[in-house]
Amino acid sequence: MTLRELRVNDVAVVSDATLGLDSGFGVLTGETGAGKSVCITALRIALGGRADTDVIRPAATAARVAAAFQDVPASVTQRLVELGIPPDDLATLSREVPRSGRSTCRVNGALVSQAVLREIGDALVEVTAQGASQRLMRRAWQRDLLDSAGGDTTSAARQRVADAVLAMRAADSALESARRASRSDAAALDRARALVADLGALELRAGEDSELAGECLMLRHAAAIVGAASALAGAAAGDETGAADLVAAGSVDAGALGGLDPALASLAERAVSLVDVLRELALDARRHAAGVSVDEGRLAEIEQRLDLLARVARRHGSIEEAIADLDGASELLAAAEGGEDAASRLEAGATAAREAVAQAASALGAARSAAARRLEQAVTAELRDLELPHARFRIILGRSPDPLGVDLGDGIPVRCGLHGVDDVDFRFAANRGMVPVPLDEGPSGGELSRISLALSAVVTEEAAPVLVLDEVDAGIGGETAARVGDVLAAIGENRQVLAVTHRAEIAARAGHHLVVSKRDDPGGAVASVAPVDGEPRVHEIARLMSGRATPAALDRAGELLDEGRDGSARPRARSATRTM
Image (cartoon, rainbow, N blue to C red; front, side, top):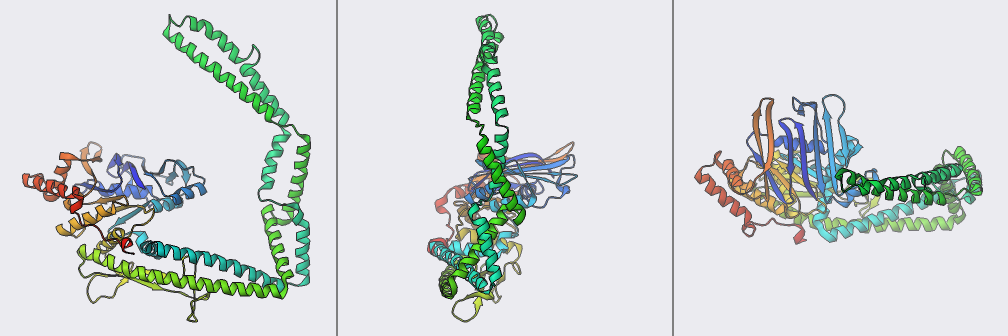
């Protein structure tokens, strides 16, 4: 997936800018205060983040942003379909923030709520500003990332757990129905039998009443529809009085004189084309008239069925509720007719299903434990290369007691879902002698930023969102900056990365480079964004090093760019997934 373009209009100092982006690793640089962070703010707004009116450019009435994505994950496309938003080659998220009133959010041009925009945005982009990545803090995401690091072994074990849990839920439901039937009195069973007798033969189908109502309306007006279609066919091309024949006759003289008047020749050509369109229209109208059935018998049948469905809906609330009532009554009778033997079989089946879940969950837990140890080692090694020499990364696997949960063999039932029984908690300690703490309790912003980098470097997520890092270089020196650049370039081999940076060592390792610049206009400061390559890029790298393009800085900038292009000389990031 790739963020192809970010359009920014009237956001802070940016009046009108378009950021064209490529896949892989890219950087955004510029003078302090030029507007780099404004671009990240604009992206956050497009993704459904908070947008106050103070982001609007002083002379403007509204701020407008749009982000276009290519090759979005199938899960996002499916979600758009569920929301009734037509998918496109590009997924475009846009937003307008006016000075008065609420902001307007759109996805592929369709109006959506801010919550929906944020949901889609979170699936497409991970924005990390000084470690403030919402994904990084979520326990569910930590669990999913650990499973990604576990590879096929963990993925298969997790699927077995999900299948076993679904089977257990079905067995528990059947057992509960049998128990409910055993507790039901004769009157309840009689009511169930009456309901089945009343509705069973009707062959109810959800949505049938709406479908039949539409067909009924068509049949009631069938004669009028046929007449209108026939009249349209006659007007377009009927005998010699239709529009097609009249236009055709008029075009003959115009065509003959076209050699004398080019404008008249053009009109004659348009007339000939119009004749074809009119005749095709007439043909389609006649076909439609022929296909419309004036069927009084079918109309009577539908009206009778609609009357029956209306009576059922009045008694039960709706056709869908009637179907649910019928299903419940049928289930109750089936359970009651099975007797004690059926109840015993169902109870044995539920017990066996629960044991199968316990076995699958235990196997998944073992796979996760092994994956956790390998991931700890890989991430800790990355962190030490990122100027955290005494860092320790830990993964704690825990379980939550639940009286209605699954017993794994120790007599203590624990909560179990489709993902298993394990609660995954990433922890971190920066120095020796420190106890690793959860990521949302202790690490600084800079440390969290490096943890995020290390995790991205060692685990390749399927359908990973675009990674955007603001001020990724805060508090690091030259050697560490070079290492950060290497890590970002390695991540960019599998995932699009965009970093805002002040460090030449990082910028020189990017595959594409955008520069934000600002100028003073009579209406106020205006920022612009442009890609740089060749000599302009050498000058920008030199400016990042020394503030100005001195001969020495230019020479060193050229060397850094050569190092960045020489992928064979770059240390590769350790991949936990490759060792699992």
